[in-house]
Image 1 (cartoon, rainbow over the protein chains, first blue to last red):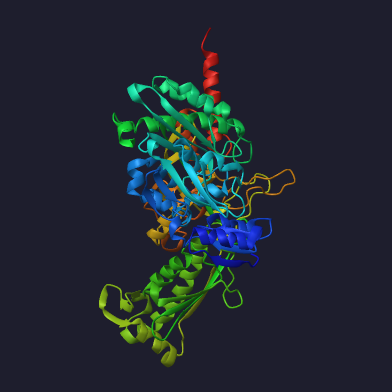
Image 2 (cartoon, chains in turn orange, blue):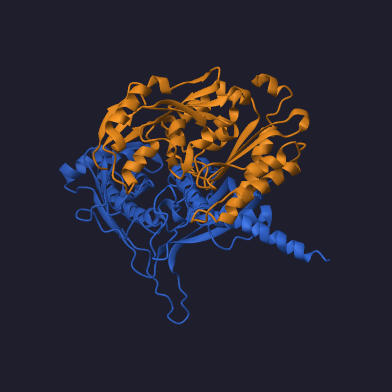
Length: 295
Length: 338
C-alpha cells in the first residue's frame, strides 16, 4: 500500500470543507471496508489524503423524523440488523443488512458506504429502492435531496460531485410498515457477493397489489427497478401465479452479464425466482391495518 | 421448493506404500528425571501429529504425553522421515517411535531388574513406574531407574529405530502385489436440501463412520474427519480453479475462489469404528486424507436422491444442478405421448 495523508472530520460540514480543500485527490473514509480493499488492490493511484467521516456525530443514528425513518450515512449494517426501530417499521432493511459480508464487515461497513461504492451487487440498494427511499447530499453549494435511484449512475459511479458527501437516507413516512422483503443468492452463505439480489414491496388493500415496487441487484450496471413487472402487478389480485409472472417479467427487464461466477441465463432464472420469493415474503408481512400504521 | 435427499458413499484408502522404500526413523532418549525426548524428521502441519506421536512414545515408556519433548522437522539433527504425506505419519513414524521407545525402555528394564531382583522380562512400564507384571506393588519410579542408568550403570536409556513397511515389488507382468502396508475404510452419509428452482445444494448433515485402526487420540480423529468433510463439501459443491484462455487463473483470491464458510458447514457426526491393526503402532492406521474421500460422492448421491439429477463433473454448483433439473424436466416432457 502506498502512503497517503489522513484527516478526520468532526462533522459533515467539516468533511465537506476538507473535501473542498483537498480537491479530487481526497477520498472519503466511512467504514473503510471497501476503501481499504481499493487502497490495497486497485490499479489506480492511491488518494493523496483520506478524509475520515466516521467521527461525525451528525452522520450517525437511526431515528423517526417528520420525513420518515432517517438513517445517517454512517449507520453500520450491524446497527440496522439490531435496530428495534427498523425491526418495527422496515424489517426488510435488516434482512438485507444481515447478509452483507461477515460480522466483522457489518460492524464496520456503513449503509452510506455501501450505496456510495455503488457496485451493482450491493445488498443495501434494492430494499431502499423498493421503499422509495430518498437521500440527502451535502456539498459546498449546500444540501440537495433526491430519490435514491438518482444517486446511482453506473458501476462504482454515483451522481455525487467530488466535494459532496451523502449524509442521510430516509424511508418516507408513507412507506413505513409497507410490506417488503429482500432476497439474495450468493455462491456461499457467508462472505458472499450477491449473484443476484432482489427486493419487493406492495400494499395489499382488499387483496389487490397496490404501489408494487420491485428492485434488482447485480443484474445491470446499477441496482434497478423492474417497472414492467410493477405495472403488471398494479391492480391485480394477489396470487402466487401473479408473483411468479412478475418474476418472469422482471427477468426480461434484467440485463445480466455472463462471467466466471454464472451465466446471464442463470442470473435471469434467479431473478424470476428471487422476485417471486421477495413478493411472497412481503405478502407474509401484510396485516389488515398496515396502511393506517404508516400514516 | 426444497427437496430433501440422502446419499451414501464408501471408500477404502491405502496407507504406507510398499513399492518403494518408505521409511521413518526416530530416536527416543529417557532423561534423568524420567521425562523423554523424541527426535523425528516428520513435520507437524496442524493436524496434531506431534500430539499423537507423543502419546505413542509415552504409552511405550509408561509416562505421560506431557513428559515427552518432541524435536521435529530438522533433518540436521533428527532422523530421516519420508514425509508428512500420504496419511502415513501415525502409521509409519508412529511405528518407528514405538520401536525406539521400546529400545530405551528395555535399557530401563535391565537396570530395574537389578533394583527389583527380577528378570527384565518380568517387568512392565506403567504410570511413571517400572513394575513387576502381576505385582504392581513391587516397583521403582522411572525417574530413579533412569538416573541410575545414567550415573551408576553407565547405560543411558536411548533407543533408535527405523520402520519401513516391507517393500514388495509388484509383479512386472500382472502388476499385482501388495502395494500398501494397510488399508482404512469409511462410509459417509450426506443429507441435503436441493432448491429445485435455483439448484442450490445445502448440505445439512454428514454422518461419517471411519475405521482408522486404534484411535490414538479420538478428538484429533474427529478433527480430521470434520476437516475432511469441510474439504469434501467444497470439492462437491463450490471449489473450482478457473483459467482464462492464456491459462492464467481467474479466481485466485478468496473473494472469488469459493470455498465453504462456517455458515456452509453441515452438522458432522463422527463415528470411530472399533478396530485394531496388527501392523500399526498400538493398532493405529490413519485418518487424514481418507476423511474427505467419500464426502463429494455421498453429497452427489444425495443430490440424485433429492432431484433425480446425476452430477458427472464437480463441483455441483447451483447453476449446474439447475441445468440438470431443467434437462430432466424437458426429457420427461418428451416422453409424454402426444
